[in-house]
Length: 89
Image 1: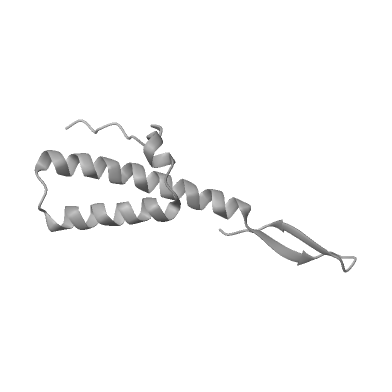
Image 2: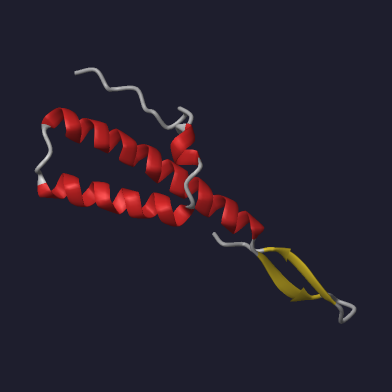
């Protein structure tokens, strides 16, 4: 069976890109609940799964951007205070 092409490189739709992290996460949680309940038709399940994947990518991108902004405060060798990017890995 042929493997489906990944949508990881596809751009996130504009209406999703406008969402805050919290809005995207809330919608993603709703999609998970709907899929777990099994009440949607097959076609609807595929559509909401696809939207869920897009929301997941959007939320992950928002988290990465926030991590890049976080800085840690350090004491420099001369006793002064400085900041540098935090190593969150």
